[in-house]
Image (cartoon, rainbow, N blue to C red; front, side, top):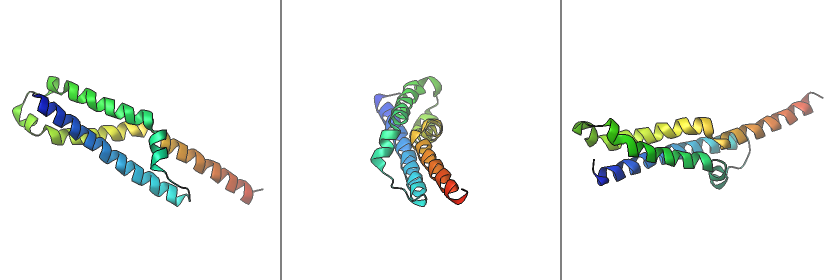
Length: 122
């Protein structure tokens, strides 16, 4: 594989990561809106910075080892598409387990629910 293919694979993987992060931010913003809370993309980035860094590092690792797994010219010709999918799904899985922003949101909603329950059930 050439350096150009490695760079294209990394860019494709990052595009997949960014696409997933954009969907995640949209989903969180909708959740915040339904809970009458203010959503901040800056706060999201701050809350999930370690997961986002790990996501980028995983992308680098996958690009680094791709030549050990792919030896077929046909697959190499379609590898950018594969890496977009890998970046998206890898980001999804990593964020599912490591996202602090969703956990923080759920904690606030739980606290508000508990307060509302105490008011209605004295």
